[in-house]
Structure formats: structure tokens, C-alpha cells
Length: 156
Length: 161
Image (cartoon, rainbow over all chains, first blue to last red; front, top):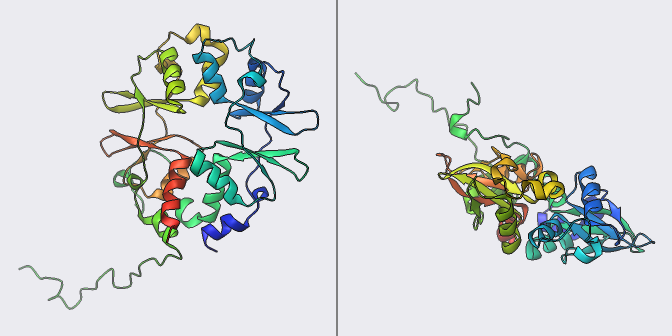
């Protein structure tokens, strides 16, 4: 199947989804950072009591706080949320995520169920993994490392 | 006396059975055959290893970018990304703000070469797991940087009829 057709027909739930830290808007930036580091993720999703995403706090938010000289202990994540907040449904086509990344350079995309509750997180990483699965013969065969082709001894 | 291959009856062309790869789509061919340098690898912001952490963060913020490549005499020595800020800077900013960025950068980052196939750029962001990958030439000089959006934009351009 053509890649463009796969993008249009595969649902978002077929992308690799990760479980992000779920935090309330009253969390301090410091607490959110601790949660992000614990999960080794570049964001935490701000959710309401029902589990519906309200915003996203990202590494970019952290940089903005530090650059502006504000305190990570005083700022709440609601005050400092990333303005780039994209939510899609898990039954939406993958092309929705693809277009968000290509057109707006979106890094993280929150994925919800039909009721709008957060089910996971995808984005640039998830889409890259999807691409590599679609093109195994062009991607999985690549060398990984810093040795250029002319310095390798393949076949030796 | 030198015998040319044509005059030597025993000469067998080692490529006589070579069959060029047939690709199912233009995009598949582009990933395998086109070079990383065909991707838009610029702009690419750099700082020196002695730049302070504070100045590096200000640059990330003012330019709304996610990474800086650390270059020393045109050679890539490190990369400083949003992830480095989260892991090594944020919770001790007051202690490291005036330190050189070389103390908190990721040294000797994963790189791809400008003449690697585009598939190598995808592999770098998926199999190796790096979101920002410097592109260098054979002499180690910085050419630019790739990221998933840049790779996807390239793929978009090869999907158009």
C-alpha cells in the first residue's frame, strides 16, 4: 500500500502510544519536571478530574520559565503551559498527526478516546517509528554509528 | 603484454547478473537512493563550548528552537537540547547558569553524513532514538541538522505526483 494511503486509512491508535505523566493544573513546574524525568518524557499532560486533557507542559515551557528568570517552584503548569497543544481521537487517521508535525512542527500529540479522555501520547517519535515500520528495507538496514561508508569494512 | 578484458575470452563480467533494485514507489526509492543532503538541513544554530548555559537557554528561547550544536573550530563536539535542559539544568539552574555549556551538553553526539541515504536519517531518529542529529561531511565539518519534521517534509515532497 502506498504510504500516503496508509496515512489516510490507519487509525492513530496504530501509532506507538506512550503513557505520559498526568498532572493537575495546580502542579508546580518543579513537580512536573520531576514527573517528566521519572517517565523519561519531554512533557506532562494537564488533565481535569475526568481525565480530559486541558493543556500540556513541555521542555519548551521549562526553557521559557528559565529564560524569563521565573521560579520553577512558584510557576504552576497551568500558568506556563505550552501554547502548542494538539489533541486527536484514537480513531482519527494517522494523517492528522502527520500534518500537525509537518505543518506546525508539533512535537507531542495527545490521543483521546471517543469520550475525550486521554489514552496516550504520540508525536514525532511515534511517527518516526511508524515510518520505519512502513519502510523496513530502507530504514532497518542502515548502519548506526559515526563510521562513514568509506571507512567500513563490510564484507571483509 | 597487457590483455584487455575484451580480448581475454575467459573474462567474465562480475556485474553481468546485476539487476537494479526495483522500487514500488518514488518515496521508497528516495529513502534508499537520495542523500541526506537532499533534506532541508538548514537552518542550524551553533554556539561555542564556552558559551554560558544561561546564554544557550536564552538562545533556545528567543529563536524558539529545540537544540544547539556545539562547534569548536568548525568541528561538532556536542549538542545541547531541550532534553539536556530537563535532565541536567532545570533543577539546579542557579548552580550551572554561568557554567560553560560544554559541562551540560551531550558530548560526541550521534551524527549522519551528508552522503548517507535518507533512510539513515530515519534510522537515526527511530532506531537510534535521537530527535536532533547533526549532519557532517567526510572531514567532520558541520553541514546542518536533521529532525523528524525535516525528514517528513522531505518525504512529503517525494509523495507529490
